[in-house]
Image (tube, rainbow, N blue to C red):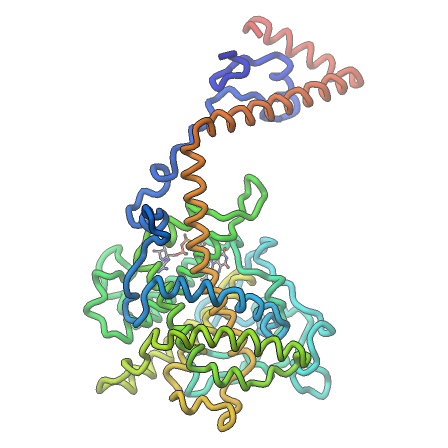
Amino acid sequence: MDARNGVQGCSISVSRLWVSLALGFVLVGCSDIQEQAPISHLTVQDDFAREVLERKEGANYCKPEGLIKDSCCDFKTVDDLNQEILPDLNKLLETPFFSHFKLNLHKTCPFWNANELCSKVDCKVSTLDRSEVPEPWLPDDPLGSINFEPIPFGSKKTERCTFTDKDFCVLEDEESLDGEYVNLLKNPERFTGYAGDSSAKVWRSIYEENCFGILNNLNGDNLFLNSDNTNNVCSEKRIFYRIVSGLHASISTHICDQYFNSTSGQWERNLECFVSRVGSFPDRLENMYFDYVILLRAITKVSRYLKNYSYCGSEPEQDKLIKKHLARISKTTRSCPDTFDEKALFQGDDAKSLKTQFKEHFRNITRVMDCIGCQKCRLWGKIQTGGVGTALKILFSYEEKSLNPKKNPNLFQKTEIVALLNTFGRLSESIAAVERFRELYQKRQSMEYTPGFKDKALEMFISTRDAIVKRSVAWADLLCERIPALKLYRQMLRSSFKPLGF
Ligand SMILES: Cc1cc2nc3c(=O)[nH]c(=O)nc-3n(C[C@H](O)[C@H](O)[C@H](O)COP(=O)(O)OP(=O)(O)OC[C@H]3O[C@@H](n4cnc5c(N)ncnc54)[C@H](O)[C@@H]3O)c2cc1C
């Protein structure tokens, strides 16, 4: 193999050398191209992750399989239902009613001093101008409505008590003059780079302080609950933990599904990220499916209410469209009504106090969202904890018959309905993303084993490299002709490297 073109080629021409030295380009390939080990050896070290990602011979289905713990539904049913629901759900969430969300992103963290706000561009949220918000959604106020001026982070505003005994979350106050409207379609949930102490502290406080202290009972480094140590915990507390963990897994899945690759400058799906955060952990993956089942059951239970809800602010045509998509979603969810049996919970002697605690702990989690130091993560954190809180309210605060829109027309605020459906949309995307990660894995596996793939990649690399070198040398020569000082520098470099044999 010609050493200049070869993988191990270390033949550095003088011109290449001075170009890289003088212009600071890294142009000369002297090292080996990193041999891409097959992903099965490189990253998917965990057997479970491999089972999740690999399709079995003759079966179009991978792990996990069987019944989802604490539910009446299996994994395959969820996958199948989700495929049917997702197109309508996506269309629904594109409508202005579901894509415009009002919230206050500037509340102070009530638990600790958390004034640092991530300044990265991907952490920022673009808010809507007053003129972009349909009139009926602006709160009644003689002087106008909500504050569209940016409020400095950490400003102290008086907060009304924004929950009732039926609520599992501290709601965004729709009537408040503070806050802003956000178009969710323009602020997608994805990788922001928010990490480190701040995010770790938020997750830690959610698990350690708000999961009934059950995690504190565990020894040593095993901070987080897993299947080995769930048996000693009552089902309500276990379910609480599973809901939180499922939400966490879903957020991680979105981050990995839309990950910013700083090398290529592109938004990409990051398989290694998924494997290391979710795909290698049977419990996390199952908890994510569990959350889907909870939301599915809540949406089924509330479907009659949603059907008759007045989607005010929407054009009559929008209202019709919303009802059409909701009807289709409900039809599918109703085909599998018994995904979760909420009546089996809160039945023991301590049911009342356990339920009160359950609510208080979940409300706390919604409050912790104001401690997140990244606006975009805070936005989606609030929506998703709000959505799960609304689902819990539907499941545990009302009998099915009382969810009658004619008798009880004002059980839910717009914010709750928007959060509920958007959270279902996010979980739905997470379930669909597992399949996308499978496809990516298959693709990468087949590329790894395609004969000649590596040679072609190598050829491409070498020709690109040589083209860059050629062009740079031409530019450098031109510059040297024009600038005498550079000409002199080149001569100096040449004479210095002559003894080395270049
Ligand atoms: C509410 C919230 C929303 C966020 N939204 C975004 C976002 O939109 N975009 C973004 O880029 N970042 C977001 N972040 C940050 C992100 O979640 C991670 O904290 C960050 O990427 C650092 O990840 P990590 O690998 O250190 O582990 P983390 O995800 O921070 O997890 C911390 C620890 O929790 C445990 N753990 C992880 N997953 C689970 C699980 N499913 N169940 C049980 N235990 C688990 C592990 O022991 C892990 O070490 C958000 C953070 C919070 C608190």
